[in-house]
Image (cartoon, rainbow, N blue to C red; front, top):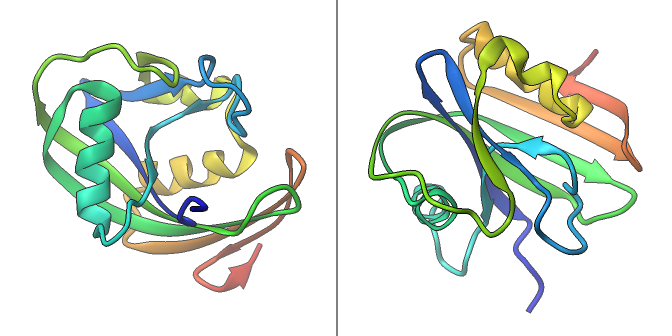
Amino acid sequence: MPKSNLTTLCYVEQDGKYLMMHRIKKENDINKDKWVGIGGHFEPDESPEECLLREAKEETGLELLSYQLRGIVTFLSDAWQTEYMFLYTADRFSGELGECREGVLEWVRKDKVCELPIWEGDKIFFRLLAEDRGFFSLKLRYVGDRLVEKALDGVEF
């Protein structure tokens, strides 16, 4: 069965830092060598919140106690199916950070995140999060690794 094209992505926040994952462990990973948040594909019949909480627990060992849906990001690409991603931030959790089989987890200062190898479009939603913008819809289209189209709330920029 093909993977769902619905996903979650979460940036867990603590002490001015985001929990980031350096994707270096998985074979055939479209995010290989990039730094991303935590999250993944919906399983059948999951709500966005159920997917978020399951993925957070699987990837980090943490149980999220306080989280907020910040936006929906539509990714289009010449290399993979269109993906609709529910973007969250979380600011309270319980448990101990564990090992992740998809990458290496590390707390990164928010002002240093954009210096890491991340997707070009991720810099846009980091800016929106930093501005504490209300709920947003962001459309990002890639050709290979190159961002060729971007629209915020339906308006190209």
